[in-house]
Length: 503
Image (cartoon, rainbow, N blue to C red):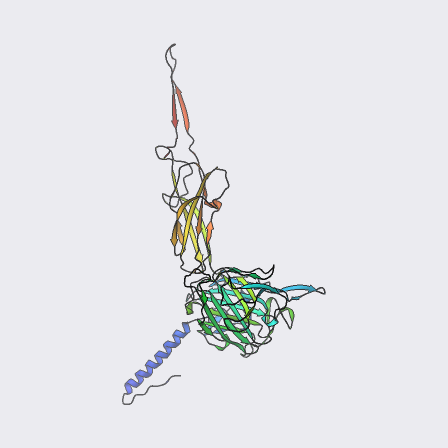
């Protein structure tokens, strides 16, 4: 609403203030129009998995939904990153239910090998703290069928977004769900009974907790940060008890929100309805199939950058069901998956140290130079998911071995040193001096940066190897030119050439 500001006896200033107020409002609208956030962007948070139900929020079209990234079997389609889905960097889908044959028919099985054992709490570190077990009687409303996640970095604003969704077996009563996004790896194997999880929290791991009702939609969603003062993970850290992001039902908010969630049981008109999934699921009403009844589907998103939580890679997700929104709630079922948002590759090539581009000399140099070849390892480090990190590259060289050897430098060798790096790029090892013929191989190892979720990588492939051949000496002779008179001396002149001079 526009309000005129009237100042008595100053008609000229009255209109100036009116214009200023109008300009301020227009400016505010322009800023709001570009302050895109979690469900203003390219992905639909509208209470279903179907991209054909096109949505528009904040004047921006959202063309993609979950079925734009996973096919009828739940497999990645396309595998990200992909030019047809700009900005989307990683995806993961975890099926968390089993089937069995009964009376010649394939039906839903209540057996679930991925449930939490008593005592597991989100406030505890992963190990020690969490335990997994197998259960045959998970309460239907707490039983996860499928869970999935997406990582998105907006090409325009650079904001880092995480989307998440899960399906449950029943809409009976209110529901509380959560998603952990972990920078490191985590796992648990209950095949031999109750077992401890493997893994640790890292500083900056995120727990997202939400509650929703059958027919009432999402009542609230909050994010909490795992804080680790020494930055190395483990028991020193703890879960922050103050929400770092708070939101509500996506269908009840406009654009510009940093976090929201919704269900197919939202109170919004036309949204409290059953939906169909392309992939197999199950529910207590319809059994095995592709139908989810109202409030059995949940999805949400968080703009990490907007809340100062970005520039980290979240490589593991754990979706779970719980007794309440309390951080110390009892946690029931879980679905574990590898998002792999951050990736690193190490690609190396041996080069001549004189110019860092040519391949190493293939033969020992001849006299008068020393028989020495100087080489380096050209190392290209590529990291996706974050722009900066703190890591290092270390180099080793192995050899010499026989020229026909196939051995690689997978371990050991001469330590050439290391270099600290903070960005992807091309780096060169310290110079190695080779003084004997034979086959040599480099190994380059990138440490990664666990504090922001960057995994390490290495290269010790055959492309790291090169062969230095010996010089083949030549020997020529020249006898005394005849004829030689009887009784005179004769001689033979020997010329040794193409030799190498030992350093």
